[in-house]
Image 1 (cartoon, rainbow, N blue to C red):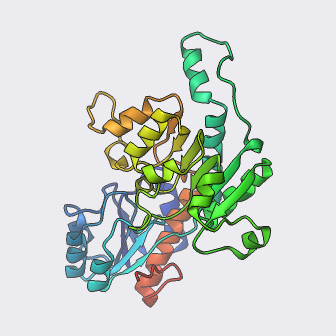
Image 2 (cartoon, rainbow, N blue to C red):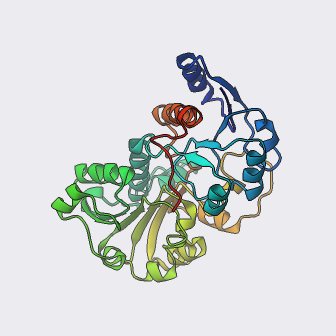
Image 3 (cartoon, rainbow, N blue to C red):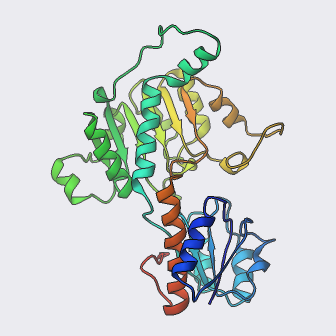
Length: 332
């Protein structure tokens, strides 16, 4: 049994080796290159591929994998929004993901970034760089005084809710599918409009679907309270970046913490020192004292990376051996 793992980073290699030692009957080869139209030929002769990337999986990639007799694809991440479900089904692919690798990693990071917004740490950092050690006028807000609107109450959203409650914040939540425990606590509101009207903080913990793309747009921002804070550690295209820029300019949005961007593959995980990049929305947002941008690192902890590697390899092995996996993605 042979598995090719694409896009393996240095921090993932120790966990690949651990998994190989635990599964000596499997031959795992790795490459640091991502799976695309150019590199797909590397998969010839393998039984399955393990991948992680933010760039799209093109139809050509699936067509070529099919021609090689490979139909087992295991993602080291959650999202499947960068592949065409029709193509996956057309060629009979079986795709797994890692739906839960460390909800705490992402939830903790999102709360931490909100705290940095509330305490205006970016502004203080820049003042210190200039030799200005005065505290005024950067007066802060307290988390326990916020009404946090959590959109999405899956694994990550539920952990975030527990953390916010621990700080004493009031929490309200919206999700199409209600969690029974949260239902008992009376945290759910009936509509997004109601959440927008009540929340002083809006934090996103939902997948990207055609129905959720640009869900935070001008119309949504207009319905929010003045001075709202926005947190997104989910998917960049959930937010219309130009609409966010306009809302920041008007003061409707007091600050934003963004771990994801609409066009993040242009900049994230690249060394851009001395290089030019055309991405005006990024430069606009990054220049602001009340916007925190991190390079899609909310997930990036030792526990999460270990789980992403080992769970995906095990799922790919299951697909090859049995034709199924408990992490199989169902494309409706």
